[in-house]
Image (cartoon, rainbow, N blue to C red; front, top):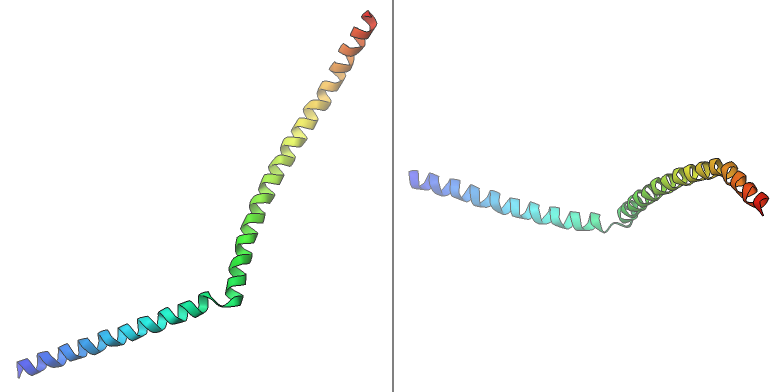
Length: 92
């Protein structure tokens, strides 16, 4: 009788493994269908584009700050350069 019980447990285990195999296959098929869904593909594409645009915006903002600093330093130098230029012209 113990042997019969062992076979029953083994059969149940075998059935549950088979069920798990079918469930895994069903999950794989569902995942493939979801990954090729046009709406989800478009959403993923838009998320990537958004990330790229955010990166570009950060770079542009840094460039704008650098340009503003350069412009300010240049404007601060102009009066000194004008004085030096005037002094040179007076010597001629």
